[in-house]
Amino acid sequence: GGFGRVELARHKRTRRVYAIKLMSKQHLLDHSQSGYWEERDVMVKASSEWLVACHYAFLDKDNVYLCMEYMPGGDLYYWLEKYDTFDETIARFYLAETVLALEALHELGFIHRDLKPDNMLLDAGGHLKLADFGSCVRVGEDGYYYCTSPIGTPDYISPEMLSCQAKAGKIGPACDWWALGVIAYEMFFGEPAFYGQSLVETYSRILGHEKSLRIPTDADPISSDTELFIKDLLKSSTTRLGSFDLLTDIEIKLAKNNRAVAAAQQVKSHAFFKSIHWEQLRSENAPIQPVVNSETDTSNINFDERDLSS
Image (cartoon, rainbow, N blue to C red; front, side, top):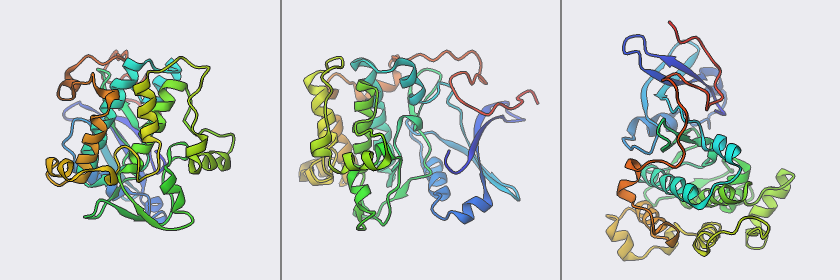
């Protein structure tokens, strides 16, 4: 991660394998925005099958440690590199699982702010869990937080987040739905929607998304529902699919007055997902089946190897 390193370890008593994130205390002190507490809070409070769980948190004189469940299937970036692009069946499945992960996170009162394929991990059965909550932020009672500087990875950052660099303002969960749109585009076309040769070019395309968003004509064709889904997510924050501004009073009431949940329900209701059985998704056979030969298999992951024999 950006503020620590992850190693594989085995619990001496239970023999269970975990992924441990190590973070320097000094580094956390030097970087007050590193998000350690938010990351710990999300993983400790989360009981969702869609979010990577933290089983232990501890420290020594130099470091703090988060002991997390190990996801041997690798991240979605690895699989996108392997496949180049996904067909609609694979893409729809993992986008749907990501929607459920974001719904769980937003219901807890957090925004991820760094959703990208690298943070979308697969278990041994090929099912997805969202990870790396170091950029998370807790929202206020109104569902927003006050942003004074952009947070996130350039290709996936939302236009309203970028605008905070010039003028501070309120940011809501819709910034995560924007990132989902960029990822959907990447799944079908092999690169992020606003990819540029430089940071300046990328940011310029994001801020000018109404004119710069292009659906490639030389790629494999996508369905009209897929194209509409991508375009509905890659809109301004007030007209974007999943925006609070688009919610009706009835939608909010049905979500027990939790606007973040109502927004997720709105995304789930899109025609792109009409074939998805949301309640059964986790029990379905995943379209990607990672080869995992043992509980310590790291062949799908770029880990710093360590001796697991002791």
